[in-house]
Amino acid sequence: METILELKNINKEFKQPDGKLVVLKKINIKLFKSQCIGLIGPSGSGKSTLLHIAGLLDKETSGQIYIKKKKCHNLSEENKNLIRKRYIGFVYQNFYLLNDFSAIENVIIPQILNGENFKKAEINAKSILTKVGLSKRLYNKPKELSGGEKQRVALCRAIANKPEIILADEPTGNLDKKNTVSIFQIIHDLMSEYKISFIIATHNLSLTKKFDKILKLSDGNLL
Image (cartoon, rainbow, N blue to C red; front, side, top):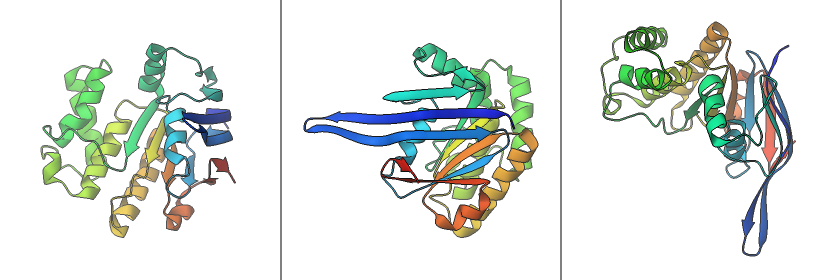
């Protein structure tokens, strides 16, 4: 199987007046193509920090990061940004949609920023949003959408530039049970169609059957 993302001996520490706070300890993860890994652990266990490091948004204290076998640790911020734009999409618990723009505009804008022309970006956005059942909500703004609909838009935005990896931090944390089940079905459908690999952080233990592999994080350690 093709390895899309590999983390080797990742450590993360924060300096404090009375010493240091160790957040992650010797973390090793391999993510394969079209694999969905669940990162399980309570709040404060280091899940978000680990996702931020994997997504090159935060700097590891030590360790190595490889994306598509490319060495990504110790890169300049400019080169990290290029890697993120090419390979990584992000989904968050609080959606972070642009409130002044419609659903379709929220999916178009990242493509424009990535160099796509407007017409192709619009066609792609409409296609993706239709696949997740939002064909009648294309021109609604976030305030006019339900929580489940907002998260579907956020997923579409994340895959719009055809990344190979999506890192999702508590994507169903603000959703009820029905919408949680719906979002995970959509994730699996998108993963199958677009051959995307996912790491999904959650503290919801009822979701464990949804993943190909489960990693448990506690006090910065993978168990």
